[in-house]
Amino acid sequence: MEGFYRLVSYFQTQSEPAYCGLASLSMVLNALSIDPGRKWKGPWRWFDESMLDCCEPLEKVKARGISLGKLVCLANCAGAKVQAFQTNESTIDDFRKYLHRCSISDDCHIISSYHRAAFKQTGTGHFSPIGGYHVGQDMALILDVARFKYPPHWVPVELLWKAMEHVDEATGQHRGFMLVSRPHMEPGLLYTLSCKHEDWVNIAKYLMDGVPLLLKSKDLKDTQDVLTVIFTSLPLNYSDFIKWVAEVRRTEDSGQSLSPEEKARLALKEEVLKQVQETDLFKQVGEFLSREGSCCKMLTPSHENNLPEIAASVCCQGAEILNGNTGVSAGYCCRETCVRCFSANGDKPVTVVCGMVVSGNNEQEFDMLVPSSSHVRSGCCFSGMKNEMGSHPAASDLLTTLLLALPAKTWIGIKEEKVLREIQKLVCTESLPTLLQEEVLHLRRQLGLLQKYHEDKVDLDLSALPSS
Image (cartoon, rainbow, N blue to C red):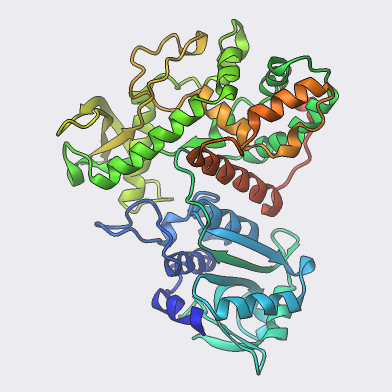
């Protein structure tokens, strides 16, 4: 019962009839003391159901519930280490081993996806954490988050397994369980993957399946040939999939200065950005983007060089989150933005974009903190950049990081041995500085989880990819 004490301290009741998955996950994340990276209310950093929306809009979860695959995606986005098992891919004996492991420690917890009919309970599919395991009687304690219906209750493990063997009618896949624990590495500092827009599946499939097929089918003479093949077929909205992690705060909370914690996080982001730009791969990507032609414009988001435009969008999102209106149409718009530079006590100047966010008759000012980059960008994509210090991560940084995050097996189909060796040297993660290595491995892990557990998979039609 070691895991029970932590879980019961954060035991909560789901706030909506279909929020059992979100309630179970927020309960487990808080029990593991995983930092959400943002405030919940007031000064408190705390996971709440309303903050778990990176993989599925809350309105959709409220109407239909959530699948096991998307709950895994949410846990990963929140910074947890996740192992998920469907009953057709595991055994009841394996399940017992995980029950035992989590019941004798408080550093991992199990969330079960099961059908209530097996317990002769009202309702259908449900999620709840497992709070304990009685080895002698072979029974598991379900901490039911629908506390308005059922209190915590013990069930025979064999019966729980049968309840998890039910097929989820929404996905056509078996239910199962997920093992959630603290990660060995922190969440991404600079980038993360987003599956909120409808085309993310196609982009993920292209990166994981399409790129290896394309590289295998072409005669490539050098590294630039490799980049040309990958980038000219890359979906144009790729920047909606791999996102820059922006930091937003209420101006009134901090005024004209940065807290030591904010300074530390910004310094880490800047160091990761610097390490990306010092790689040989970044130089190759920059050379590709510097070529004259339409491909450069295609790969550069239309708003990339417009920092105030990005800040306006980010500040509206920040207002939605910090005011607790995630998933609710609150009608936020940013009336104006201005770029400021903070410098105090001899510290390095910090770029902050301030936005006045309006909702109805209410006005609030928000700040977006911008990591500095001293790298001199060149080429057609960056000719409009007037001030390099304080520039946000751009297409060259993003594309470099995305290539580094691709699995090592991506490149093995390259026919020319010399080109293969050159590429493998450029993308080798073992030689990267520690911070960048962790950033890349985090993205790679996200890619793998999205590919493995998300049920909305589609067949990749290579003939439908954009031509060069």
